[in-house]
Image 1 (tube, helix red, strand yellow):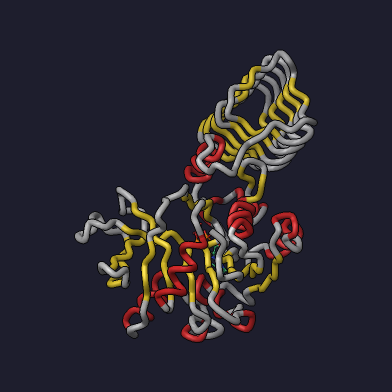
Image 2: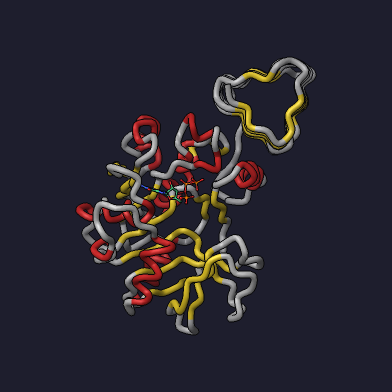
Length: 339
Ligand code: GTP
């Protein structure tokens, strides 16, 4: 369903410390997933729902983001970059884009892979007249997430972190996606670090603002890419068609020896070279320009651009950074390799 709201603010200024050392080289929003930058999945989701005016609240490695994403036309959106002068936190970054807000807008953490009907969420926001509409997910295990308890009409009653059980039994948690009325940035103090989750949202609730939770009728795929485990898991999920409109592919320019074995699902980029006797897959994404020498075995792995796997290596549950090399005959399980 198309969205009646056309503007979004994506928070992409964080340092991504949990994904270091991968995020020392590039910001989290640009880590490759099925050979596309992580943020491309949010940009595609927004474009699919007609939300084409997208503000990126950038900070850490802003130049790399601008160089990689440009004006956004590759994803059918128009990007505007606004840089935090210093780390401002998730709410401080929203305050920093205040001058560009002229109506209700979608706000989203920039590290999500989410398949959701944004039209239904934005419509619910307009109908309820809420200050903020929280797009909620129902989960079985609430312990890892921010619990948002609502009454029968969806009005938010409480925000609770890291609970064991939800006594209301609704188990609705924060997805990191919100629809906000244009006066929200005015509620955030200027020029200092301020958090959505721990300061802005509880403060607005206490002040009596109408905050609503909305559970979309169809629960699509959701993941946040924060750790090595969630990065590898999300790659596996997408290779396994968790989102119907996302597919891995094998580039026509890949040079794959007829004596290599490829076990789907895999995603293989341009100009990749795979030598005889290699066994690739399942669940492997190989970015452009990588070289896999003879007799290597790779499963559950992500290779960034121009990585080189020398002969006879074994890799599992591992990420190899751009231009990095694994020495001949080496074995890597659950590792991040950057050189
Ligand atoms: P960790 O350091 O590993 O926790 O990762 P992170 O920096 O991404 O932090 P977190 O997962 O809490 O952030 C959620 C989203 O908000 C991510 O998309 C971040 O890029 C973004 N974000 C976090 N802090 C800031 C900030 O100070 N400014 C801006 N513009 N975005 C932020």
